[in-house]
Amino acid sequence: MSQQPPRFPFCFEGDRIAPELAERAAHCPVSEVLTNTDNRAWLIAGYEEVRTVLRDRRFSLSLTSDPDAPRQDPLYPPPTVTDTLTYFQRTGMLPALHRGLGPAQQHLTAGTIADLVRGVLRPFLAREEQPADLITGFVFPLSRLLTFALLGVTPDGCPDDSVLFGIFRTGPDSGERVPACWEAGQTYMLAQLPRLRRRREGLLGELIGPADRAGTLAEEEIADLFLFLLISQYGNPATFLGAAVAALMRHPDLVDRLRAEPGLMPRAVDELLRWTVFLGDGLARVAREDVTVGGVRIRRGELVLVSTDAANHDPRVFPDPQRLDIDRPENPHLRFSHGRHRCPGRSVAALQAEVTLRTLLEETGDLGLAVPPDAVVWHPYHAITLPQSLPVRWTRP
Ligand code: HEM
Image: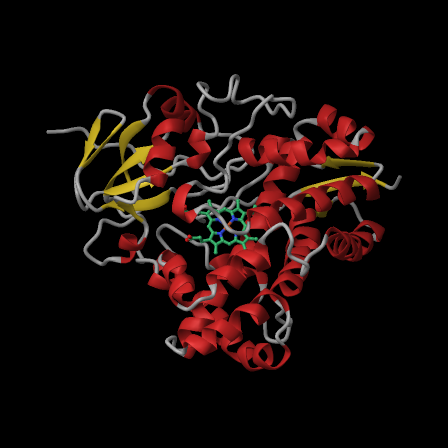
């Protein structure tokens, strides 16, 4: 009888890579694992193998919605999530999407981000009692404001953080929880559409015109596509910020250096994007035909879980990968994926992280964890990693 492969994901912590994953990145780039639903899948962990799979169109993201395909989690993701790009292409929204998220976008400038950060941070820091939780007191409220500003939606009726973050749930409880959260999000987005049509504000205000002109999408499909953008903007920058702060708290020397030389922040963010563990699952693909990767034959219809976290710790590309080192001469990390589905929000996401972390250091004279780093508890079973809380102490400059 063949031995059962190990269950993946190995852990949900964002400030250390699981030893099993680091080991695979270094020595076993393609290996078998069991998913959260006991399906067999191929875990892709080596940098070159990850790039190969992500750019090879024979590995399909949209097929992960096919009810005949093996699953990572109890629910099959809807096509509006796995085939977003096709929806945006067919309706003529894609150029507006790239413009509205690209380096020249004006919805969320560095100045606006800094104002929003200070608006949330100052009351947080002015409180009497310490320690206080940076996630509920700063990361989530800030993420909501940044989301409203970038997308052009309003807070009225916006589901609370447990619902928005609940959409990222994976594993045993996700089959019931995720649909309820998604439905709440869709209801909110449907209610926002008339205002977006009237006011044409933010990224969604730019997208709704082409969507309506195409006239091929049901109102619920537009709401779902916009909700996907909302949770991408709300959840991804928030989880990265949580993991980045947790990582910085483990590296006080780097914090001192960044306080002294704030111009190093873009390099630091880039390295934090590489070093932090962002995915609480793999990026899923289904093979359209038989393909050999890293010497392993992957059969048509099989599930592949791509770990960009592992690839970002491949010692062949990143010497001493567990070291957080902002002086790396090159940093070709794959945090934003690679190939056809590479994240279109990468530029605005990096800007948010740079301005937020810089402002956080400017507004605090000292900032430290109130618990040992290993005592930080991370949310289990979510597609993205986030500490349940980050208790911090601080002094004012
Ligand atoms: C730190 C922040 C972020 C990270 C780490 C991140 C990461 C990623 C990754 C890894 C993918 C590719 C998934 C795959 O290959 O299967 C992706 C796709 C995507 N991201 Fe982001 N993202 C971030 C922020 C954002 C923001 C701010 C937006 C804008 C609203 C956004 C919108 C999207 C969209 C629409 C896709 C789907 C692209 C497609 O399917 O072709 N992301 N993101």
